[in-house]
Image: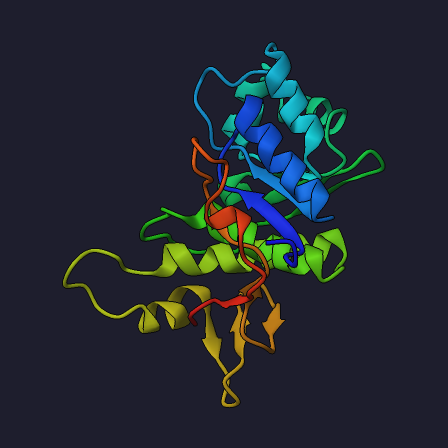
Length: 224
């Protein structure tokens, strides 16, 4: 775990569990990222919720989570409130794309036009694409585009039993493979190497604070 570059928590944690994760990340000099997946009880009125958001390097809610957590119906205002607590807030806004907010600027990247089959897991896929680019030092606009492209793969996959392979869906909805095996998405972003991410996306154990998010320095390839 100490050789990983980042810890990504795939859900909202606060209190003692979060504190154990934070201590482990800081001891290993790792970036700490947290997704916004949470229940209705997670709101900024709670001191432990505020402390958790203040403790991470990147907070990645979707639009509805950002609004509920902050109590702000206006997305711009919700983003501003969260950015007061966390240096980088990334908000997934579905068909409207995604935003990255810092204390200096708000950056937007539009979504890739497609007809989704099943959006389950698209948010986690976005996180993986964004973080792979962010940890490689790419500009935030490019990180958002990477997130959108990787999220693009999941809704294009047919997941019901007995349905055809996702291969044709990639050509019709998301992009195409070139002769050299590279993948070109409809976003215009070429991916010249196997897409991978340097931290596990998973939830830690409530009892131990350990789990898939906590323990990998391997780069996992995204199956194309």
